[in-house]
Length: 109
Ligand SMILES: [Zn+2]
Image 1: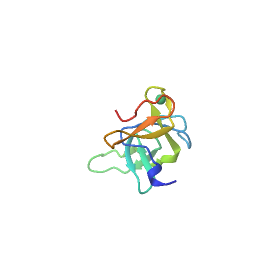
Image 2: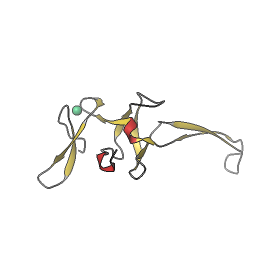
Image 3: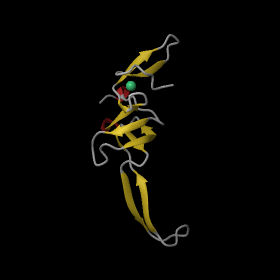
Image 4: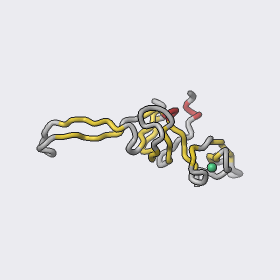
């Protein structure tokens, strides 16, 4: 997949369409365009056992999100409330916005 095919931005709401968290919806926390990976809130949680330390004397389990492939998610359209196919539209001022292919609503407002 080409890097410029990624329409996902930080703060987007996305739905996971593949993998162990399939069907879940979360907010994009980070986008790594070079690695084609995104970090999504509460998706792909990995539990790690931590040893007791100065900050955490008891140790315990730490839950942490791990990045997933952006091809495994779809951006949600707020209007359709479903995963949207995204079209790019160029505005008169030259800026490009993402449009939901289904309802025509802009995802960048
Ligand atoms: Zn829509």
